[in-house]
Image (cartoon, rainbow, N blue to C red; front, side, top):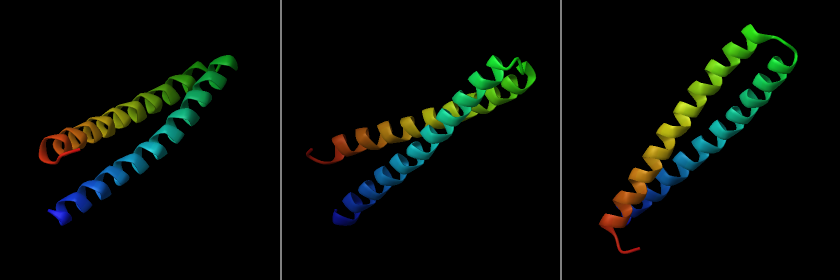
Length: 79
């Protein structure tokens, strides 16, 4: 059981670190989209928005994984 607990902690940490990086990317793309729109660069803004949407989708997947891990832990161990 100890190895299972340690694996859960490592998984949770990896997901959190991946999400931290995704949030950094999302922030950067969001800012770039706003700047491009403000400068009237609609084609560039559109491409940046596509990238932003992809990053948000990836973040949603990480959130789903984190939620599943929490659900797994709550049904497997006393927390």
